[in-house]
Image (cartoon, rainbow, N blue to C red):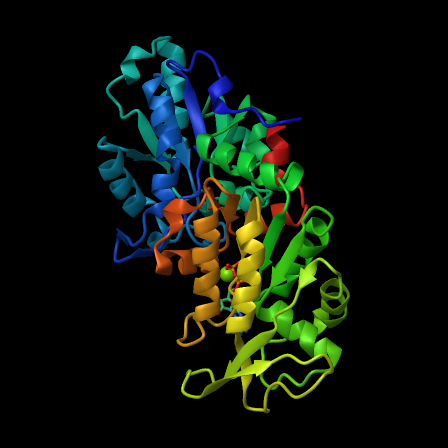
Length: 400
Ligand code: ADP
Ligand code: MG
């Protein structure tokens, strides 16, 4: 069953809408350092306000593990959000809303509440031990605060938490505009991708990349690999890779996957020291050989690989990219990743439907400043990786 969009909800006027967002933003000295996640959910909040709804925002910040941690209060977020929405956002505790609702019940009048802000935010939901346990009593208590539930934070959709999945059991539930955009985009690439479909996959954490390769292999035309996947594969084939980032647990599976015809392996790599002081290009021969000395590591793909990969990206009608091609945080190992960022962006919006996601991947796109040319920049992080790995996300399932 497809998820129901908030656009399908009728008569929002006067309704209390509980909106689960992901406002887990970096905070320092009481200030929000990066408000990107706030901006991402503003369309949903404004959509609801324009239709006369009262919005109750729910988010977590950090990992307080069921206890009140002053440094993880939502106060700085409430402040920043008030500026962005140009309205006074109130901060509120669950108990306060409950009391207010009781009063309303006895007065039988909604008007008594009309001077209070139309957007309020609950204190960090992870201060409650029931949240991460997906305690259903707690979920019910949350559900009692609203008439409707909206999930907007895609980045929390993979969490089986009370405010993400549990609450949807007790309220009519909808996808917010952000969640809808993300799911529509990801469904487009996983369910009906236009071919050729090129997946570019790099990065470090093999446990998140292997499921993506397995799940998408039948759907894609090609997978261009970089990062830890390549190192692990080369090591498994018997090449000497020195100090390279290799995940031993995944050697066997990396070998099996990278042998597939659809999987394209680098022709050359850049090896060197972590500081980028000495480095050199090494061609990958057909027979296993010494790629790195013991103190060296593979830290990027080389120019022949960039040229090879560019050919595939230039032909793609669907392109998905996750994971750095190398240690791009250190020059001169940034070339492979930044080249991919430019290629993916320049092929997107028109020629191909382009999707990117992942913490470091977005950081790399920021470095080249071409994010505006990509069709979908997923805010999902881990949730997006799980989705592309074919996993069912508790938050999404709860909406079906
Ligand atoms: P994302 O967050 O985009 O999903 P990952 O977290 O899986 O990506 O991995 C990104 C990280 O992988 C980057 O910080 C990058 O430096 C690192 N990386 C990629 N290739 C290599 C390599 N060959 N050696 C060391 N680190 C690498
Ligand atoms: Mg990462």
